[in-house]
Image 1 (spheres, one colour):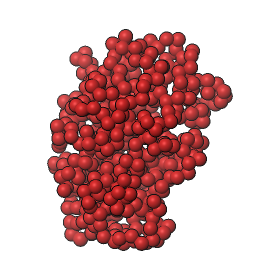
Image 2 (cartoon, rainbow, N blue to C red):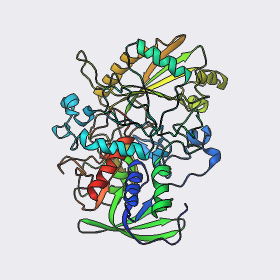
Image 3 (cartoon, one colour):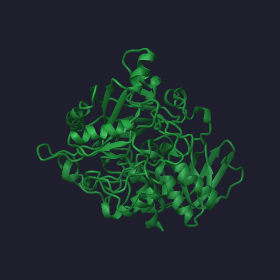
Image 4 (cartoon, rainbow, N blue to C red):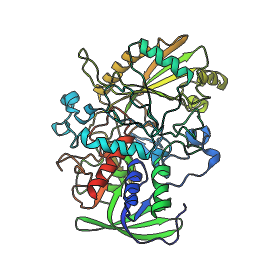
Length: 501
């Protein structure tokens, strides 16, 4: 779908960015007969040779955002999707509903949060039907009726059945159950009928289209079936406004320059890209909240090295999740988060991240005998953690709150004993509190709320000072949830579109 030299100059809605929120919102509007233009600064990634190439995807970051950001003086390109489909073209497609507790964070973090953040301006009940709709559009494969402790439950069957558990995971499930845990099969946006069972999956382009993305589930259908227009490799050079409304954009890409107008504008640039866009184009309305409270989950990595091959590095084994510690017991009343199984991208990635060089043959042996899980600790909002513009570039300041690190230590202490029950293995854990490149699940920089003094967006994710400009990506979240935010971003986009219509 390359850009055309001649496109319409008038639309019902223009969607800036093609990630989880923008793709879903644009698809929903297009399916309702609205004229939609998608504007994406990244390219349509079609280099099939690089789809599963570790050097290309993990080391050279060919599909990541091409901009370098300043992280406290260190200029780097983090692992953020920079192609059509945004980060959904690279994510692991673990599409989990959060818990009811995520909508009332003041009950768990009250002493660390401003009173305005104690409750989200929407309820779990308001979101429930949109979680179901998003799961259906992304054709999530999940085990219906299974128990996912502390999380919201789907009350009907998932659109697809999950892949059968790998033999390693059958044994793991039994081991964890004996430890008193309730492991479950992860709900994944992966079509099992065409899945190649690639051992890596996250961080790579899916070679068959089995892994659901904003591109293949939303944007391509919107273009092919509902006459939407997609422009890739396109920069917005100017934003035209009239009083409290945005009226048009000036665009530039390799095919030419464009002037386009619309009644409605949706920004979906992510927790870094969206506030940066608003600042670059003078669209903050003087709201100092925009860009602040940048959050991404604090990771706790659990690894067991086994005497036997586990299937890692050769087969798809990312299947199990654990939420028993999502809300801890009365002895330690903390809200932690979820734990999910993860693959290791490959030997080159291991070589790059290890503090000392080790032979490739040794690392390959370790790769094929590992079992890895990652826990996600909810990163509390802090105004000092922010996205800002300095000298024309994007600067990111982020440091985890001591309470985040404390809860990570609790998770490490709580789950490591279960990992150590894996037969014939050596288990260890680490807290990734200094990570700058793997900014997993970034959210928070344009949070929504009812009060313009404490939020950037209203309840329906519209900028308080503009009548027709909405922000639909992870930046809307006032707190960062205890699960990956992708499904919530999609469901929220569907909720907002319903309210707009």
